[in-house]
Image 1 (cartoon, rainbow, N blue to C red):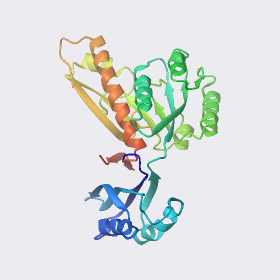
Image 2 (image 1 turned 180 degrees about the vertical axis):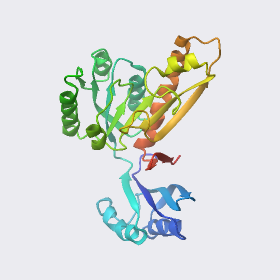
Image 3 (image 1 turned 90 degrees about the horizontal axis):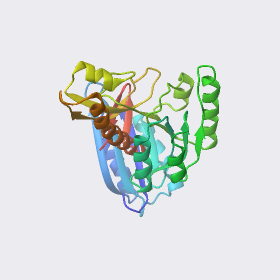
Length: 286
């Protein structure tokens, strides 16, 4: 979007004629220049969704007044909506265990400013990745977890996230299941990377499951976390072919690349406000 300030509107309502015109005309009337527009109609549910981005440089409504100015339009169409600005970075906490490849990918892309994300802290149930956090000068918090202290430690984690005004949580191969309370606090804001092409091989040891099944394709899936393990709305997936010559270690090695890229793309879509969740599905505005 360049260096100029842009407004990003996500807008969903019952489908009817004139929706795109009404929204774009609001922007036009106030001297806004639309720089990106993507819309979708769910023909079965008759639901209209749009992501529209416009340059705020010559826009006649000040930024601080824009939300209130949109309310008549929202009420007219009884819409669900969210408004963002391109200079707002998503404050993201990354949870990890011992595997570093996904964390490394996110930290590298953050440093390159590939997506509007800042990572003010890293949380882990192991200490192995503290040197990586130290290298990027990001505070690292160690919460050892057992069956006996899991609930208490999670409460401490939630308090830490609240103190740091965290908006989004990324589970970068974090080998713990979050409680319903935790998920409810960050509904559709917890992104997990699962090392299989869901819904195939959910749960533990998916590469071993795939190897024993003799599949010819393996994958990785980034999804929002719900109370049901590996069952949340899918944001991004990718696959790679394998053959009978590949060992279990080969599957794991090939899968690491998929996990890194899929998680990074999912976080980019999320941080650029390209994702709308409807029931257990997502609309991805590309």
